[in-house]
Length: 343
Image (cartoon, rainbow, N blue to C red; front, side):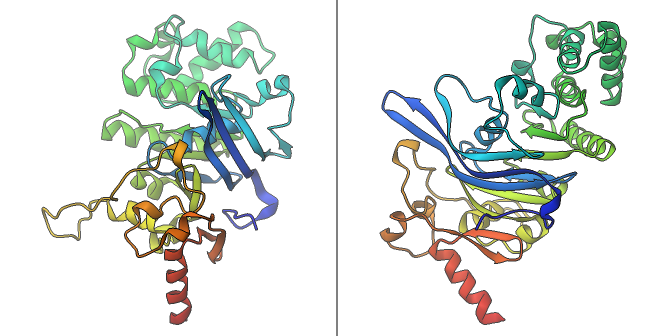
């Protein structure tokens, strides 16, 4: 059974099923995303969280078929977006989907923006690729969009270049570019990376405001659980290329079940803990892509008792509570038994 976030099947905008992605190397293919499932409802925000290298960004790039070429390839799966499987549409149609129906904010705005073209040229290019209007009208839309993302003096900024803007301003330009064609879905990949706390809050508030105004859905990719708690409706927790837990945000924070999810939450500083208490950490490191166990991938780092048999066979995803799906590792089964006994 495929896990889904949300509660209404007739309102699903995006449904990802059995998505697997590999990168071809000299030593053979390395699987970076392994049979990932999730769904997103219209107008809602789905958070994808996990350590660096867990497959968050690769999953997002796979949705719009922007994997690095020629080494990156989608091995299997389906990506149903608004009634179409994006993995099967023609490249010409995919060009219209990217930037038109699906916008994306990339991690590093300085590398995502072209340093030799002005801000105005890059914004108008995004408009002219998807709308049949004149360059003058496209420039008007660019100025208006910069104004909506609260960039001061937008008439002047359209003539400037990325290096002339601060990090926060460049991030706002990326948001403007992603939203200028009013997409149905926005993918925000670490939209606040390398920004100070004040600017982070402004960027996240801006995305939330524009989401409410446009009625679009959002996929928010981050390693910051505080950002997830404040901005998301549903959460997908990834580890080593797999989904290990997913649930509505309040359910996940109220009843974290997978040992990896509990480890992430335990590592966050808390105001109700004694001062100067040592922060908890998850011991060990993520296994190499070339040495991933077939079974539970978190087992080598799990502090709960287990034997090596858990490394042999992949645990299934089971519904712990309505809408709360967990990879059924031995630690989860113990939690399920305790919850059943309590009932």
